[in-house]
Image 1 (cartoon, rainbow, N blue to C red):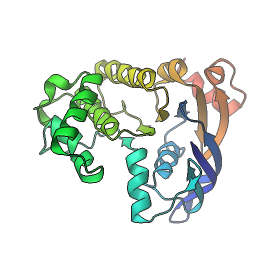
Image 2 (image 1 turned 30 degrees about the vertical axis):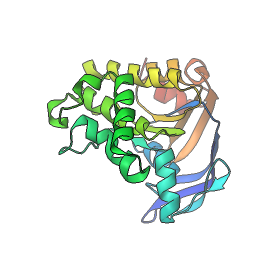
Image 3 (image 1 turned 90 degrees about the horizontal axis):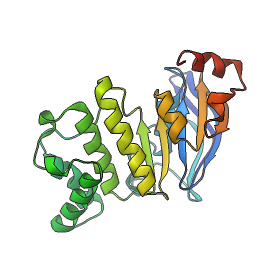
Amino acid sequence: MITLENIFKYFDETPVLKNINLSFQKGTINVIIGPSGSGKSTLLRTVNFLEPPTEGNVWIEGERMDEKPKTLQNLRQNAPMVFQSFNLFNHLNVHDNCTLAQRAVLRKSKKEAGHKAMRTLEKVGMASYWNRKPKQLSGGQKQRVSIARALSMEPRILLFDEPTSALDPEMVGGVLSTIRNVAEEQPDLTILLVTHEMAFARQIADRVLFMDLGEVIEDRKGADIFKTPLKPRTAQFLSSFQ
């Protein structure tokens, strides 16, 4: 589904990603962990070219991505991102936040987009809030709406960039439960998730990647990395969550 080939990313002259070579299979849940500043979010953002790589190639289903407007539109339609800061349109209600891109990008009718929005809002437990503005919602509710908005685009890939980091602890569980439900209900969806929620990562991941200083230090199946980390740096990082 996704291949990252010889990816380097520089901010000015500072390397943020260093020779990343990864492939992600369709229908898998891939969790990326690591300390702050390790390049996790930048790696995620290279997948849909919110941060185009300085060097290297991104391939989605065998097609090489580039910065042509049509390519970017299709890419971000099929691989939307759920941000840690929600990024909802504050002047629109919940329903319209979930229909705007459908109508503008997918060219759906108002009625069709509305039906899809309500179905996805129902999936995340937010259908009854359809007429509220973001300022009337809690942080956890906003994040669930942002997940519904992404799902409304019928993506094949879903990118989560630390979706619980801006939430109060009591709100985290609801959002994590929503992500788990989405993964269970849509088994063909390929998920890349950056998180600091280690217990959740251990439960949900088909694969866990540990990053440090712009490199993938360890890449393991399922919960193996938590049970028996192979690299001292990985063990050091995970020990702080014991």
